[in-house]
Length: 163
Image 1 (spheres, rainbow, N blue to C red):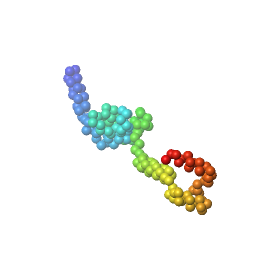
Image 2 (cartoon, rainbow, N blue to C red; image 1 turned 135 degrees about the vertical axis):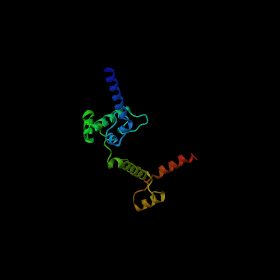
Image 3 (cartoon, rainbow, N blue to C red; image 1 turned 90 degrees about the vertical axis):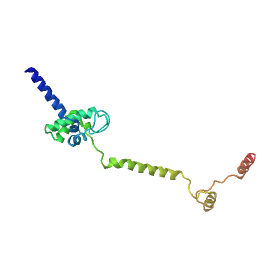
Image 4 (tube, rainbow, N blue to C red; image 1 turned 180 degrees about the vertical axis):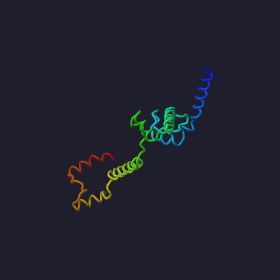
């Protein structure tokens, strides 16, 4: 009788293990809850990830979620239990509108700063020799300072040898 009971127990355990297949773990109900939880393996994805070899942490958590759903727990209760066990950091918070628009806003502001800097360092139009002479005659800015004639003659003498 003991041998029969051991064999029966072994058959029941194998049937229970085979009843919970990978398709149950990837069901929409399990993935709906798993998508709201962050994987703790360090991959920086949610637990609904489908990495090619399969993440062991996600599989363990999906098995736990599947078991909780089988007992009749709602999605909110499952999430609350995960938060109680692992802290608030396990919940995935999707980015809002600012999260999606933020990089484009930063790109636009950067472009404005670059254009402003280029305009600031570009030479001003109209500051030519003729414009400076006209400005000097009109008494506005852009005029060259008066240079002593003796100093100018000395500069011309020193630079004449450079040719």
